[in-house]
Image (cartoon, rainbow, N blue to C red; front, side, top):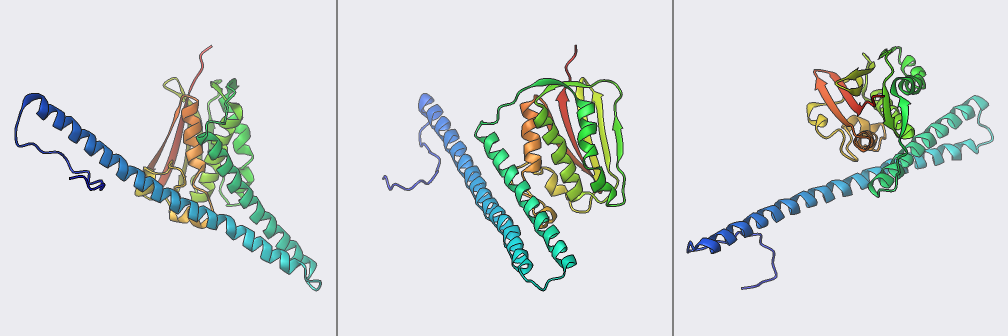
Length: 267
């Protein structure tokens, strides 16, 4: 009897007749596959809805906070020192908001296939050194100087330079969010690949985070409080794959490591 209800029940047969039995077996395989796909889609949709809700909250927070400080700045009697402090806070809130919106826009373009790469031959070591140098003061302000090791041998890769720089920037920002010291930044040639290894001590990344660290919108509890979108490492993975490479994460005790590998061009 047809009820219009999707039960996902498998077919059974009281007779074993060659082709009929084979047909039932194949139909049951399709039913199982359909059921598993439906469960996967429901989970993805749930995670997506929860992520959008969280991101919406994270966007509203700096806007609300910034508005509050701007209202206080309108008070004529406020001392100039306090006024300057509030202006710095507003600027910081707006910088955080801009960064989140840029990541959302960038990831949306990736998913829509609108981000076109323009590969060129670049010296991966030189660009790596230039990019991490921009974050030097951020680490020094934490009273820790990273250990940096870059191969002296020219490491040439065919890559979109902006995307490559974005990979490094996102890795640096992730290290700043989760790191508590012991920073090690390495670029070397290994097995005909350009290997980028970013490693740091952490007390916020746990074993269960590692397998999902590159998932879109995934954030640890700590990074959620730091107002990150959970897209930085997802973009790293997407860009690495787009350029013929890959990205992996490891946790050994309290040392968290991310490795990005890109193919080297021999010339």
